[in-house]
Image (cartoon, rainbow, N blue to C red; front, side):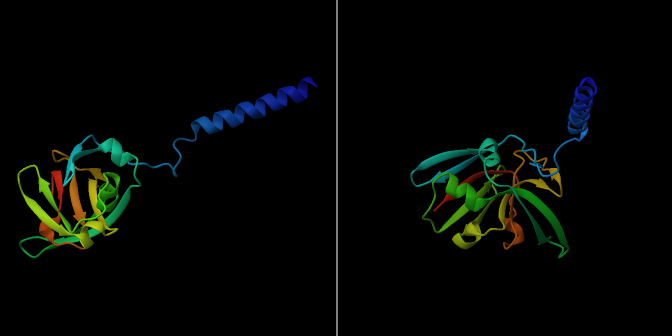
Length: 159
């Protein structure tokens, strides 16, 4: 009886040791989201959408190619959340387009189709690294033009 009890305890101890030393679960790879706040302006008023709100949404990764002013094409991967999910989260349902604003005053317009596309992403990671702009956000509309990849996004106005 003592040998059986000892054997059961040893097996349990080994199982516990193995579970603790296994490291993080590779299926649980939620990206770390830097802190930020985005203002969404609607006809009904303004809503603040924060990084903690984004953490409640399903993150996506998209690959997008852009052409610079010299005609050179570069392909990058962006991780963030769909713009469509953000708009739904703040209660936007009927609109014709949005204007995305950067911290430096630059802006770009998106029609409703581009704003609601599954591959239009507000990203906080580019090529696997946190974006180092202030705020650390970039729009990545894979179907959009190069000037629609707005960096340092601070505000989205819905119309």
